[in-house]
Amino acid sequence: MTGHPSPLRLGFLASHNGTNMRAVVAACRDGRLAAMPVLLISNNRDSAALQWAADNGVSALHVSAKTAGSDAAADGAIADALRAHKVDVVILAGYMRKLGPQTLAAFPRRILNAHPALLPKFGGQGMYGAHVHTAVLAAGEAETGVTIHLVDEVYDHGAVLAQVPVPVVPGDTVESLAARVQAREQALFPAVLQRIVANEINLDRV
View (cartoon, one colour):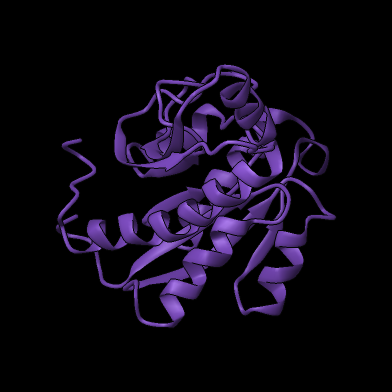
């Protein structure tokens, strides 16, 4: 992304553990990713992600419809907080709410998500986490994978930035498959972000 200051300033939205956030922050801090984690927002005041961010030097906010007064007000508060922290790219790290129009408009083609399958397979509303792995196993698929994609107003619809396959092996359970997919997610997300930093991926042209 030409014209952006280096390092890239990253904002995160998470509802629970924020596992991919933790992987990205680790990559920033060990030199694999030339980026700076500047803000985590969680809609869940009890999320492990909020506590982890606070413990690891990342500014953290709890914003929800309940705290803000409405879904629209929460959407505006999220967009305002991300702008105030001069975020360049927003990462959804297990964020269990659909993004509102104000946040989408504030960061067009700058919001990324990881989906635990090879989109367009096993995508859409309700297809997240264990639901995806259950569907993959029920369909008898030989492989699944990870997709990093841009976020728009439709679930799992935005342009694909990268995909990696993950084999489904005999005897797989939802838990065993999820563990292998998550491990690939945690490696792929920082790598994709570094490709954005290096202008190998131009978010305006994908």
